[in-house]
Structures are given as C-alpha cells and as structure tokens.
Image (cartoon, rainbow, N blue to C red; front, side, top):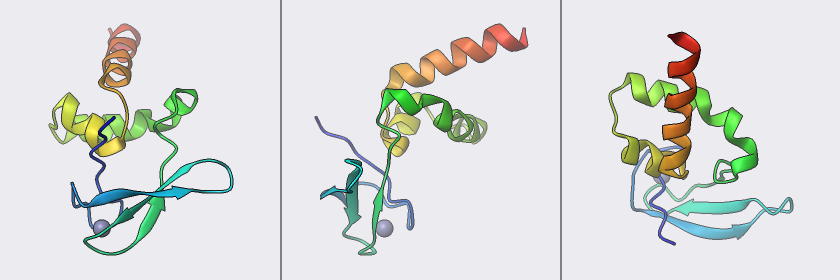
Length: 91
Ligand SMILES: [Zn+2]
C-alpha cells in the first residue's frame, strides 16, 4: 500500500516515510524535508468522525477527493461517504 502523506508541519508531500509505531500502535511518520516526526490515527476507520471537519475544510479549499485522501491518509471512500451523509442532512 502506497500512502502519500502530507507532512503535518511543512505540508510537503512525498517526503514522508513510515517511522515505526507509537506505544499505542499508531503508525509514526517522519518527514525527510523538515526532519520532524508525527503520527496519524486517521487511517483507522474507527476514528472517521474525527476527520470530518478536516475533510470539510479541504473541500472548502476546493481540493479534489483524491488530494484530500492523500493528505489525510484516508481512503477516498470515507470522503464519498462523508459527502453522501452531509448531502442527506443538509437537503
Ligand atoms: Zn515536513
């Protein structure tokens, strides 16, 4: 699986590599551009609700679904489901 994550600090894409796991089992990542490490839990479907505001913010910026999925390290399906849900709620 090839996840192109965006660095949480300098937002560079393509310079982020896996960097082991935290004690909680959450994958850590290291950005070779700025040398910082961070972790994301957003790749776990169980925490989908946490990322909805992040998805919405990026939708507002006009990013494509695949760009958002890459940045957040999530499946495009989660974004589709979010849009489906919000459509139902708003209309
Ligand atoms: Zn970085």
